[in-house]
Structure formats: structure tokens, C-alpha cells
Image 1: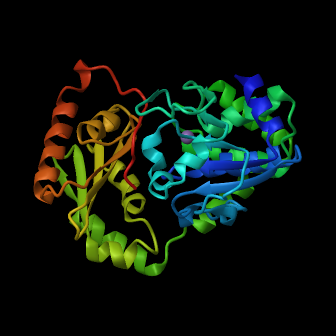
Image 2 (image 1 turned 90 degrees about the vertical axis):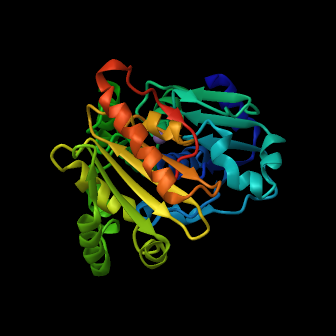
Length: 345
Ligand SMILES: [Mn+2]
């Protein structure tokens, strides 16, 4: 597969790097790293993602080169950090998925179990053992002898740190640390990346106040094991452009004694309901819960979206019922595998 990937890149002169509709530090870091690595091979590279890059990722220089329009002319594409067509909805809706299918496509990913696999790619390099697509790109470039300049190295480091939550979760293996060490030796500064990341994830004062409101409104249910809060359309309108409400509060929910799961619901006026689910260590059920509700994700981070007009209260109580059942049977069932479907934002 590695040789095939090399061939695909060498044969093309213009390459599009595609991120799925749920960009994160790993997908953006991977896209930007590849832009440098493949660009240094003399290729013309453009970056595509169907949705805007969220503000908290703007610390990565080059994020603004990611475009929401697919160029009309290109020779090949590389899809990073996703193996499912479910997450290429925007491309499909724009009628442009066909353009991608008509040309050689490579997939670089690390999600172990995937539904609705991308079946049109000639090259799929997917290693479920790796922490991140960033780590996969590091390995790939190293073994192909492709240079990783300091900027590419910084993006790879950001990608790894994103998916491993700063090397703190169990996705970080000994090999991940070795890659981090090699990148450090090559001149990438983690403290500098950290400083930038913190600067860009600061909240405006009105968001700081709003966080207090969300905390006050948080429900602790199922004997204090599940923390939930609901964000109505008016608050989505007022606060979402400034800061995504779910990450604003979910870490604090999980840092509350007894809480195993945190669920942030968003209730839209058009009837749509989304949920962002996060789980603590020892309660690896986020993926299964989301799956039951028609979504997907990882054992500790997942989400779902309901668009069939079911009343909000019905969706919420069904979700809490499933969640409670999963927590009640924690010891009796195998833990989640990594599953990737559409993850609600
Ligand atoms: Mn990833």
C-alpha cells in the first residue's frame, strides 16, 4: 500500500487534501503537514473541507488555506482522518463527490472499525493501532524518505497532541512518544505550540459568564453518574459563533465526583437535536450510546444527530435510558471499539 501511495503522489501534479465534515486538530494537522511534505516533492497542493475550521484550531498556521470549494481541476486526492463516506456529506450535497471518485484517491486514517467505508479509494492506509493520522503520516513520510520540515513537524505534533489529549489518553503508545521525541529533536517546540493553542482557545468575558449559567443548569441524573445540559436555539445563535458551548463545559462535568458521562444536547427550532457525549475512564460507552441513537464516535467521545422531527423530550429520555442501562451493565459487556460514523458537532 505504501508503494501505491507513493505512486499516486508521484504521478499527480495537483493534489487535493480532503478533511471530513468533523475537522479537529488531527485532521487539520494532518492536512497541513501533508501540504508541506507533498509540496516539498514539487506538487501543487490544495486543502478542502466542507465546513469552516472551528476557531479553536486557528492556532495552526495555514488553517485559512483550507477552502470550502473543491477546485475543478486536480489529479488525485488524499482523504485524511476519515474512512467513512458518511462524513463526506457536504461534498456529496455539492455534487462534487463524483469529481473525487473519478480520480485516484488515497485514504490515510486510524479508525479501527468503520461503517459506510469509502469504497472508491485505490489506496487505503488505515492503522487502528496508531494514536492519530498525524502519527501515521509521520511514519509514512519517514519510511518513504520524504522530508518533514519543521512546519510539517509542528503540524504533526499538534495532530498527535489533539487525538491523545496532550499524550494523556491511552491512544498514546511508546511509538507515539518516540515520534514526539524525534520531532522535538528536529526542532519542533511543544511549549510554543501549547502557548499558541491556549491563546486561541481563550474565551471572551461573556462566554465566561455563560459558562456559569450552563453549570447552574446542569442536571445530574442516574444517581449522579450522568451530567446533562440542554442548549436551546436562542443560545446557539448568541454564543455558538463565539465559542462552542459543549467543550466549554464538558470537561468540568467529567471532573465532578461520581460523573461518568456528560451529554450536551442542542435543541434547534427546526426540530433537529444533536448531542455531544463524553465519557470518563472506566465508562467507555460513549461510542455504543451514540450508535444506539443513530450516531457514532469513539469509546470516550461521540455524538449523534436526530433530524426526523422526534420531539426533544422523547429523544432526551431515550438517550438517558440507554445511557443508564449501559452504565448499569458496565462490567458485563466488552468495552467499545472505535467506531466512526457521523459525529454531531
Ligand atoms: Mn484522528
